[in-house]
Every structure is written in structure tokens, then in C-alpha cells.
Image 1 (cartoon, rainbow, N blue to C red):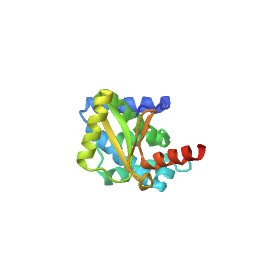
Image 2: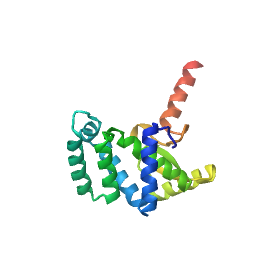
Image 3: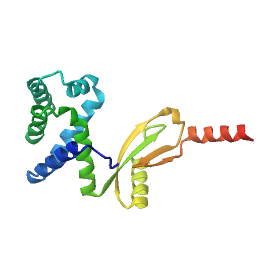
Length: 182
């Protein structure tokens, strides 16, 4: 999904991507950023820490250096994140990661797709869904899957601003509304 990012986040992401390409470290940086993004999603404390202007540049740098070392991040990713800390731009980290992902997806000809299902999809179901999306759009989909048992069955697929909702929950709600109107 191609999103609009702030100009600052776009510039940082572009600079990081260019450096990663020069150093032939695009996949290492991508892996490091995915790990960071997962940490930001899972830890409210980490989100608050990177967003907080209360911490000094030194505090941000020291904590992020330790976190990145523990995660086994590449030298380039570590230098980049420490640069963000020194410039008081750490609050943009999640947005920069999303902009980096989007830029990389454009280069690779990929499209992001969010798929929500009532149960976890098997490997064959995931492969079949990817093939159907690729056939429809002509681009390689990068799936992000979620499970929401309240759907009861079916799928919700979001690609950019498009959404296809074939969930049983939505179909039942539509039937309920139709029966009330009769």
C-alpha cells in the first residue's frame, strides 16, 4: 500500500535506501527495520520512548544502540538510527520505516495487501490468494495476514484504497438489514 509520508520521512527513507543499495545491504536493512517496526508495534514503552522529547539525544542514542546491538542490526542500520537520535528525529522512525518499505516495494514492483481471515490461512491458501492478486493486479503482492475470529468465515482483502469484504459476518449483516427493510 503506497501511503503519503511527510517530506522529512521520505527524504530519510530515500537516503537510507540509496546507502543500502551502495553497500549492497538492502535486505539486511529491510530485515533490521522490520524487527524495529515489530518492536514498535509490540511495545508501548518503546513507542513512548522514541516519541518522547523528554529524553536527551544521548539517552535516545544510548538506548537505541543497546537495542540494535541486542537485535543484531547491521552497522548501516545502527548508524542511521543513531543519526536520527542525534538529530532529534527518532519520533519519525515508524514513518521512515513505512516510507522505506514503500520505496522498496515500488522498486520491486510489489503491492502491499492486508488480508484478514477468520482463521489462519494454510500455505496453499496463501499461495492461491497471492496468485489471484498477482493475476488481478499484475504485480507481486506482499501479504500481511491477520486473524479475526469475529469474521466467522471468508476474507477481507485491502490493497491500497480498495477493499474486498467477503466475510460471513458482513454477509449476515447485509441479510439482516435487507430483512428489516422488507
